Picture 1 (cartoon, rainbow, N blue to C red):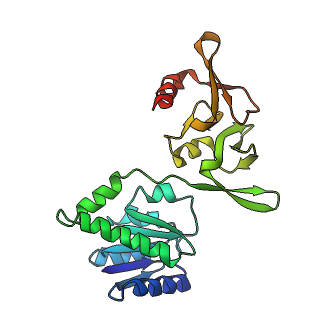
Picture 2 (cartoon, one colour):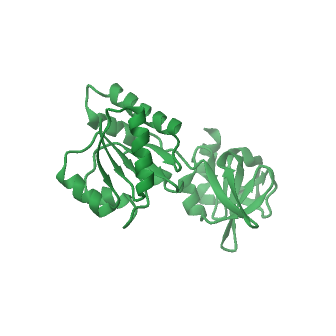
Picture 3 (spheres, rainbow, N blue to C red):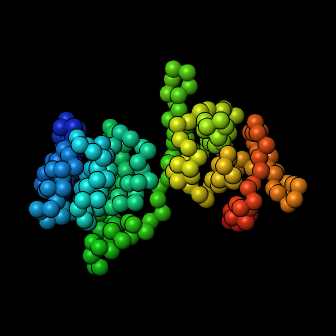
Length: 251
């Protein structure tokens, strides 16, 4: 297998190279590239590798600029310290998204996934593999980092009952009743979490199915919700979202 490593930290690149050769000594690393500019230059002048390992924050820009400048057709395994780019990564040629420091077990699982997909689609060719990747349902954000006093805590998305906005601040409410500010708008959150599990009912609330305790028919046919944990504000479904909300409840 021919591969390239796009990574601006030389020690990290060397460590990844060592793990790849531990996995398979026959893996050939054609280049280690630290920037968008050098990556584009290399890709324009060489045959596409079988697989690319790519960091997101590079010397000169985010790696997504590479996809804007050159038609990269190779599958990609992203290796990064940042989890907020996961959705964007899976909109390009992503096989997997590994958070640094990458451990050997996660790396081998990602390469095994690539090999499995390649074998499955070997007869039609690599184009079918890439098409399959592009059609997969995206992997949504699995956790959020929040600041509590002087501490930074990781909250699993599965533990979040709902989000709401109040006076231009967005809060998450956990199933245990914690009310925590978060540095995301509701608009952005609605793109990062699974729409099968969370629904934005109005400008103020984005809630999980599990948080809905009771649905009432209110004045003039509006829907009012009781949430668990109890919300600080009254919760109504916007008129323009009522039909979609009912359909979402019934899925």
